[in-house]
Amino acid sequence: MHRFLYAGSSLHCESVDLAAVARLYGTPTYVYSSGTIEDNYRRLANSLEGVDVQVCYALKANSNLALLRLLSNLGAAFDFVSGGELRRVQAAGGKADRSVFAGVGKTEADIRLALEAGIFAFHVESEPELARINHVAGQLGRKAPVAIRINPDVDARTHAKITTGKSENKFGIPLKFAPAAYAAAAKFPNLEVKGLQMHIGSQLTSVGPFVEAVEKLLPLAQQLQRDHGITYFSLGGGIGVVYQDALASGAAAWWEALPVDQRPITPEAYGAALKPLLGPLGLKILLEPGRFMVANAGVLLARVEYLKRGQGRDFLILDTAMNDLVRPAMYDAYHEIVPLQRDTSRRALKVDVVGPICESSDCFAKNRMVQELGEGEYVAFLSAGAYGFAMASRYNARPLPAEVLVRGSNFELVTARESFEQMTAGERIPAWLK
Image (cartoon, rainbow, N blue to C red):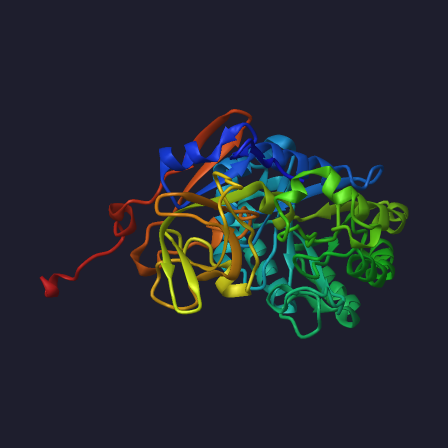
């Protein structure tokens, strides 16, 4: 569910006409719905009613400071994977002491920064990392709280580039080695064994893999409670979102009209399936959603530059490119593309929707049916709030896009479009070239 809907012929984010945003701030521009994020947070936080749940937003999906402050105000903690992301949490006023540090390659500097910030726990990915955290904690005269990420070898049945819970993935420690890894962690003088962690992948559309993974780890969780007194079990993230028919998914009637076995995963279905397994444990449960919180809460606005007629194929050429939204080029990802001004009297065209970058991978959609559009008109890429701006680049010397946050009828620029001077501010021409 989200808050992007047509009011008459104009696409709105909550009560804001998106065409007005495009005219005021230009394009490409990301626009986010505060209300959608608030709804997503509350639904997930309440999905395991009666269980002690802590939601730690995975800010790799979108680390905009305004969104982090919004989530922090709602009660969220955070899941970060770099020192830079930790510093973003701090800059946004988030609570580091309730947040966790994940990732397979933590540096000594990262670990030191996190310990000084007093984080809730490190989610450890390997035995060498345990030794490194112990070493840095010893230098600081502290005890580092840790949980070990266990790889349960569960097929998440998602895209190969975003699965993380199979034995061939780089993440975590195999389940069969877990008791030995925890025994080793308990012997380090500067570590405090605090929890158990898993994360099997992203964009899961069924509760089955979650249930399978939790069932595999339940005996280990019970053993770790007895042997090491762990206090929490982190399930990671991974709840998928609707990308196809995304505009329709803003309406409850669309979801309710589907047969039960065809409905997309929801926080309610997730909680109903996992609560019977987790409730008896008596542990705090950490959830680390990223995509679920923000994907359907954001759109990317683009301007039409040309409608190019080709031989057997037409091209809708936008001012927005793969550097602004890389998911289609990188993951073959689908994003619904809709006009900001809907006109049912116009004919539909089959086009390739492309950007201006000089390579063929700068293509958002092939053979897509869209309303006939001309130069200067606007479109929106739906479900673009996750891994959109966060993965944007300056390829072709294109500036990073702007970001706007909406609440009700109000909207505000929260990230200004990058200027050429900002883009080149850190660059220097050596004196010997002058």
